Amino acid sequence: MNDKFLEIAITAAVGGGDILLQNYGKIIKSSKKESLRDIVTEIDLLSEQEIVKIIISSEDKYGFLTEEQDEIGRLDNSYWIVDALDGTINYIHQIPLFSVSVAFIKNEQPVVGAVYNPLAEDIYYGLESIGCFKNQKKLSIMDSPLSSSLTAAAFSGEAYDKKNRSSEFELFGRINDLSQGCLRTGSASMNLAYVSAGNLGACWGRANKFWDIAAGLLFARLSGAVVKFHLVDDTKHLVNYLAATPKCWNELEPLISDVFQLD
Image (spheres, rainbow, N blue to C red):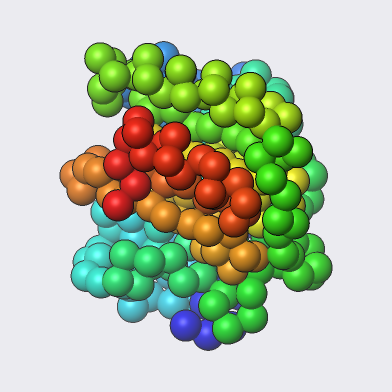
């Protein structure tokens, strides 16, 4: 991949974010998908359509995997993956923590990515050959132990595996007590961006949608975090993952592996 793909990803993420800003705080139509928190709004669709339009106008060789329209064109081994609004519930309730995530996937690995937080005007972006950046500042983690780190979790959807969700909640509590806190922010892409920037020592998730986390997984790895992820449902594009500083990883990986599969 080259700088052109990174430029496209950044332009598309900002374009989608502009749609979110234009409609922030307005009364919007929404409908539930699989659960109370799995909601799609008309703004998700508008943002996604804008992102796809921007990418196609610059590069029309590859297909798309998107949250709202699913597959567009042929995916093959390389494709764009888009979450036009990660943090829909936060957005609806006007909690200023949501983002747009755009990544390019090659052989099931994210190789280019951009995550845009439009209210903060923060753009995170990464490319294998140059590393990971936030607003033109190159990012690298601070390798702090778990006891002096803040962490974040993203739970599986209640429709995925109701019987075993209690183990995720128990894990959340254990990590909360072993660290300076375990958050549930409502935006998995921002969790990973915060790991890459050194705000969080670790973040983890079970059965999260791949489009939520693809770009962030790249950022965390390029900034020096240890990253492992595992596709658990190819049809629904669900992924387990852990991204952590090396010191946090040594403590967290055994705990998390006891609860869900990472490889």
